[in-house]
Image: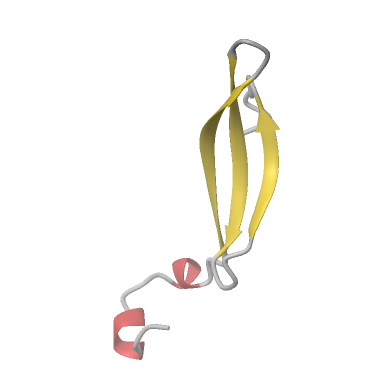
Length: 64
């Protein structure tokens, strides 16, 4: 963790963050063409465990 003096300057809600969210784009070779998908995933920062939250070719606003 960080030293107490350094943590005093960090807002309390930031110190309590336990996971991170991100989206990556992957391309898979399908039957004669590339298929692009977006993968939405969550990373638990303490354990570095990754969980896939969703995969979609054309995700909309509700997906995000």
